[in-house]
Length: 251
Image (cartoon, rainbow, N blue to C red; front, side, top):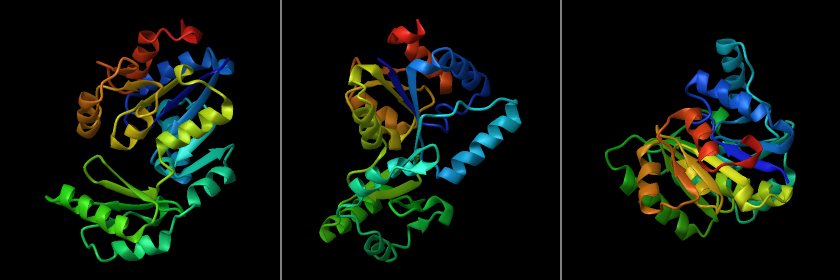
């Protein structure tokens, strides 16, 4: 049976080039036995730019993933083709235009560039001393509309509004079910608040040392033996987790 490894990109897989290359080599040694999933907040275009930058900087390519989860779990790609079944699944009860109109009445929410928006994601920057109160107010307004939406606030500035049934965790779970991979044969890796949804699934987990405070605080409240808080940063933390869990493919 194959193993599924799903990892965030920025500040998890990417951040220390030596670590990324070392993990690439580890995964390449068992490539036929591993489904590799990149789960990122980036858009498809932004992901492609990241790959080009990594190649230019290191002379090496990132491993090509089997599946790419972009837009904080709002889109899934297989060989650069959008997964329409996932798109249909998360569209139920989703009213993007109504949400966009609602947020216009909240000037604290600054829209991110158009490249970071998509049909199933509205992205904003929030930089205020009252972030928690603003997020709470936005949630109350969304709840009053009855729209099936969720708010993901991470890195103390990035605010994304997504369909209720989307997100990194549900996207990875969708792929896990599609590929018929059990929870115990799945490792998810991340560093920020938008990765919490992945860690909420009953799979193995690797939280890297350089994680954002919101993820570390959540982990402190929800620690579990199947989730590993690594003493190492970036991809070194993923490599450590592979050793910690004694994943057979890599032993």
